[in-house]
Image 1 (spheres, one colour):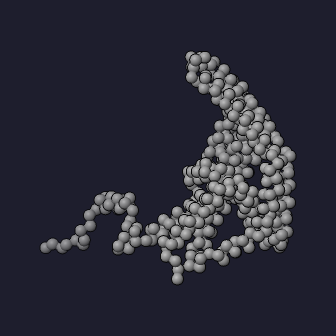
Image 2 (tube, helix red, strand yellow):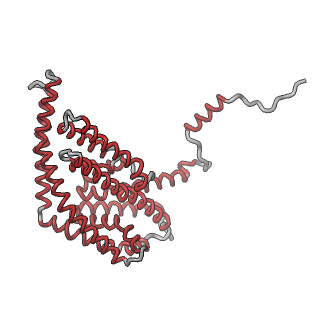
Length: 381
């Protein structure tokens, strides 16, 4: 006999509480396994495609791993050192940039920028804060990454976990499917497909968009000679997963840097602006429609809330699981809304749905505008 819906809801709620408790208790202990699972999930479609081309699963995973090692080695040797060096130089140059801005504002608005002005004091404070906090952040980051444990986690445990999970991914999915409750299996499978569609469209698609745009912005800004162009392009590409935020933050940072570097050479400043305009055009008309699609169903506000909440509660691990959990909760919420609209609470006793109020108002307005219909004309003698 099937369990009542109330008992099923209690069981699933307990499972959700246990999941959150595991995240809370284990924390950074499960970090390499979460990273490995994310990597395996991202590359599972590629492994499946290689299998359809005739490769065995093991050989397909070997090819993916070999390419990943080469890309990672190139990034560590060429890109990462330059990125870190430019970031440190940017933090160190922040006070000088603020000082130049003060001089420009003093020349244009002398009364506003005297020694006792709030604006002048605020600008000085901002420059000093960026230099001190930025230096502390980069120093702490480099110190943590140079630790033996973190190096082992990043270079050994995560790749090993991802390789093993990628090898057994299809078997693990089949095993989980075999454990589903029989009565609810079709519904759970459909929900899982919807969640996978949402996460695939966002994580794989939007991740590829971020990588393409970040590379384009960084290379283009470096080619035009903009200092710290690699940092600005990396920031813009990383934040592209939030609509308009990446282009706004990266564009504002790049144009601000261009104003300091190319002041008076307006064509160079316009060129930096044109790079971001072109990037936005390509993203909106080519990359996002082709790689992400138009119906991902993960609203930016909901995504920001999930990142903030899970990051505050569970730290870095929470940031990693925020997107999958947000996608799952969004799909489940839409499913519950559909169930509610099919239930008696929404339909009422009669079991019929009523038209929305704005439809009724529009219908009433149309009736008032239409000429009265009194039926067929009556013949008079």
